[in-house]
Image (cartoon, rainbow, N blue to C red; front, side, top):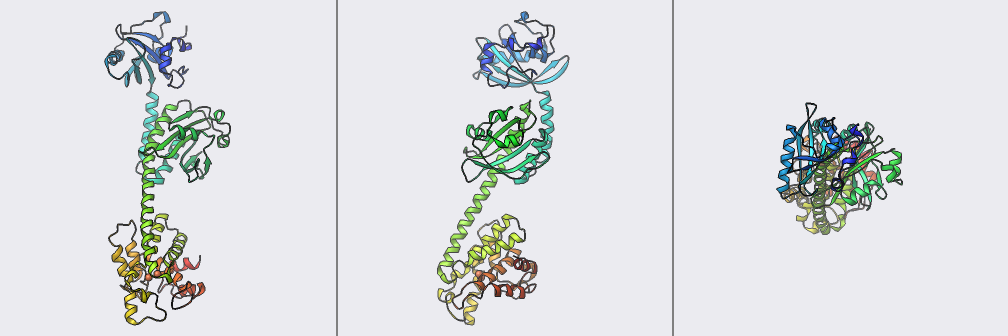
Amino acid sequence: MNLLNWPAKLVSEQSLHHYRHVPDPVDPTHRVTFASIDVESRRFVHATGGLLALLGIESYTPSDLPWACERKDLEPLFDAAEKLLSAESPMHCAEYTLYRNGMPFSARVLMDARCGSGVVGCVFEDITALNEEWATFERRLLQISHLTGPEFLWATVQLISESFNDSMAAFSVPTETPGRLRTLAAWHKRRPADAFEYDMAGTPCELVFGNKLQTFYHDVQQRFPDDQDLVDLDSESYMGLPLFDSYGVPLGLLYVTSELPITDDRLLRRVLFTAGGRAGMEFIHARSEAQLVDAYRDTVTAFSATVEKRDPYTGGHQSRTADIAARIATALRWPAERIDGLRMGALVHDIGKMSIPAEILVKPGALTDAEKALVQTHPTVGYDILKDIKFPWPVAEMVLQHHERMDGSGYPNGLAGDEIIPEARVLAIADVVESMSSHRPYRASLGLSSARKEIRRGLGTAYDREIGETYLGL
Ligand SMILES: [Fe+2]
Ligand SMILES: [Fe+2]
């Protein structure tokens, strides 16, 4: 009789009851097998054919139960079962080295003392292949572990996709609209997938999020017939892992959907947990950075409003200058974080005018030399106000240098060329353009065309040539 054909018959009612959470309790591949140990007699009182196959025992019939096993490698199991009966916790899980036809292999054994008096139920799992696959994956994960932020997310989805049938692997985050997610990084069939947004309703992602549990479906299309994305991707298997911060706030979701069935989900489960844990930290980091930028922006906006209140004629000058500067920097393809910093500098670039009497600021007509000299202190005063605030950008320097000119003709320090930071060079142009194209107490707007003429006139002398040309090209 071939024992391998009747694995289910010997699984006790009790074992089934207790191990219901184990996927596929009757596993035709014998990946997961069962047995019960009677601790006092040190005998197996139930065993599946799978266990016998696992241990390489073939000459055996069901009537042999209960069965005392004389093998040395099983002694630690009986010892552990005995200890478990007197332990406080009824469950115990450990890895053991067992032997099959003289060859060692790794098995994870879950023991449960709640299977009846003196009996310990065991679930055996051969994890040799899993360990090997895991080691391969872990090596590749180590190779990308030095990456941070979006680079780590992209490398991770690529690694997961390529390790599991070139499936779709994606990190998604909630959008402003409740119930919608958008991908941050996604990889499918050996290439990055375009970012996309989707409604969670009726998708497996909704259940993963709602239940806050890692979830696996081997027949995902049948379960979610209304999910068009699954149809488009021709998905067979799906696994999703929700990512939360330490307050239980949902940060995002890591999921994999594969055209080919994923029969052994253990590796994928482990992979998602490991990669998802690290990604969660990256998410938290990105979020706190964003919150910090928001806090800076709020502070700077309050500063900006303070100075503009005293000088209603130029109200809005700083924020319009910030918009122009950001447009130039975007055209220069500066990274978003650098543009954030440039905006901050622009929003407060005239903060030093707080120290100048309001009568001078709003004075119609020309200023005397003394008044002009006073007005020209505003970059230095602004620098002194801001220099001790630890911004992640050179905000105080931007403010100090926004009236410097490339040929050294500016103030307060007559800096020239590379001595002026690029942010201040952009700011100089945006400031001139904004001032000339809006009304001043002592004159009407000179118009945008004369502002553009002024920038063209000063290209390479007063103003940075590349930045000036970029502005003129907008
Ligand atoms: Fe200024
Ligand atoms: Fe200004």
